[in-house]
Image (cartoon, rainbow over the protein chains, first blue to last red):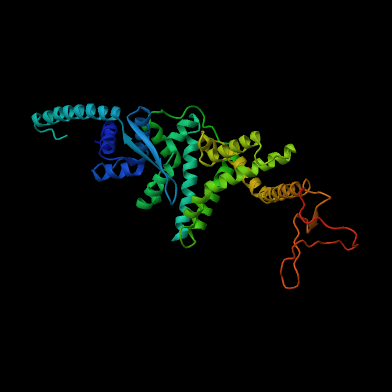
Length: 111
Length: 266
């Protein structure tokens, strides 16, 4: 299965988790997702997700001027975002446990 | 090495411009929201993974749009006016070149100039104020109330423009005309600066002359002896040894008039 399809479903969760860990600007978030093992994540998808979460009030943003080159836009998590993260973490745990159990009991099916 | 960096930065500015053009059907605030800080992110991406990591601006914009939950582009692509786009690109490129030029000097010249920017904001406000006086033909004293308020307004507006406050940042990104107008105004202020300084110097000199004249004229009194424009109210007489001659008098050249030795009307 194409992992980008899986990724789409959990990108909000992954982005919220990364920003919850520490504030970050667009490419920094992309890099941290990649380091965490989500190598196929698309830059524009992450930026778009950041902007959407911001518009939904889950993230806050601030601009940091750079001495050399264009300024950076940082994102941090809001209480709304933290609540959303908690909800999605619970959903994910429930979902992955269910899928894991299913795969375990259905012998012979590897995928 | 420096040259390739240089080029890629100009290219990046153009790339962001192309992505913005693809989002042109969205409200200006949304486009701003989506692309603010994008240049910095892309610069880092290119630095780390090379320019091949960038997809086409169309694909990039589509991905951005989809992830932001904005749906696909509505209707026909709205083409930006070619000339306005070219002007925007040219100004972006000129800005990048200028920054790079400054960075070529030893020491942090750009940082130094950046710190001095607020000084220019105040100076241009003052130039505008002087020009306004010239245009209205007002001869304003330095402490004229309404004109002082006008000066305050000029400073606030100029500083806010400089800080890109009051939505100016967005306006400058969205409208090439606004950006051109700001450039023209700055050039105008630079051109008017010597004239304004000259006028101010003239006015200061004029004010001083008035003080001088006011000091001397009312004090002019026919019965007082004057020397080099100043009154000599009390005269003393000294002999050749420097001893003061008590009760001495001074007569004028005609020998007919005794000069007042202690003039009480002074």
